[in-house]
Image 1 (tube, rainbow, N blue to C red):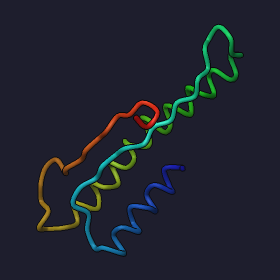
Image 2: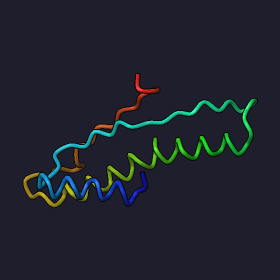
Image 3: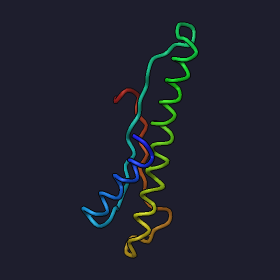
Length: 91
């Protein structure tokens, strides 16, 4: 999912519910690519995907959620509430 898609999803929340009270970030990917038995191409591809999903995805969602939360005068809190959850293979 791209940053544009994530922004679209937050906008859908705005249109459907009118506001956002809390963001729970809970997404992660992990691809086993041992450096000694993987090609450099496969190893870097797995790391890029992990960084995109595990780091940039939550960062973009936090930014988008903050924009939406800031529109609600009743939700004037700084910083906006965010819950980031880290999981290992869904456990």
